[in-house]
Length: 343
Image (cartoon, rainbow, N blue to C red; front, side):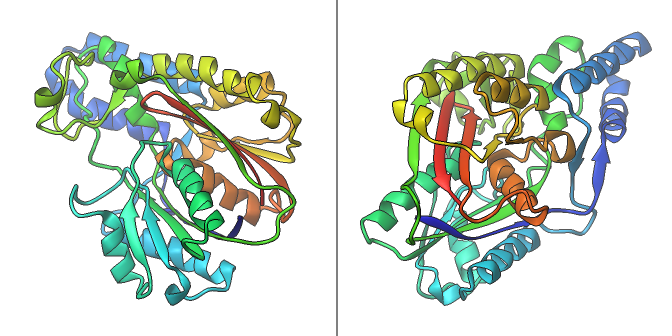
């Protein structure tokens, strides 16, 4: 399996930390006295510094998520030298979506004119793209499909809640301040490669309550949630605990995999949840000289973080054909995954 083409489309609007702080102040100020507000803003600034948060991309007024998804797919098709009719499977993997049912893939298959394809959605939080790479690999290996596109349109403005009434709330609200927007499309086909891709995954389901976007029906499925605020369609994440899990689980995947340890690595990409976390993991795994860390530039682009970084590396002459890539992901669930493949 090889990546035949990959494309990314992001808004031009750069949002710096001060703009996010102003949003918090605007919506939270009426709910508290001035002393509380200053404490909250001071804590957010500290968390920005500790995580390495600086910028993220957001849509401007009037821009639609759909347009970015379509553009990412067009770029990938052009680089792959394929037409929409050549795609026989479209997997939509974005957390970003306009509805729960039917699958978002049906809409994009229609809009992109992929008349010969079938489609389904695959949703596993930020891990979704890497899971889809794994699924696509097995489809291609068994000859089920020839050209597979994986599409995510991570435009998640609207899942946040800027009304923050106490410093304690930042334990599960801070992550929303780091989210950026991006759409990517990845086209996979069979082809001559030096070695076959290799995947390892691990999940600790006891940590499922660390990060969610609840629906109104959440209480019917679990009445023992950790988060005290379960507003429907409002994102929460206990960042410190998620990072702790990542630092524990990801190194274990490497330690326990003789195959991963023996494979060379020319370039590495990791999920962008924190610049500091990426650097620490890279150093621990002895990949600090090859890691591409763009968190401070684009923030957390959810399932699009690794393919967004790959597109940046491709366009900036960091990623070239034949390079051995290590793809490292930690995701709500809590799940960890690593893939090694040749670009």
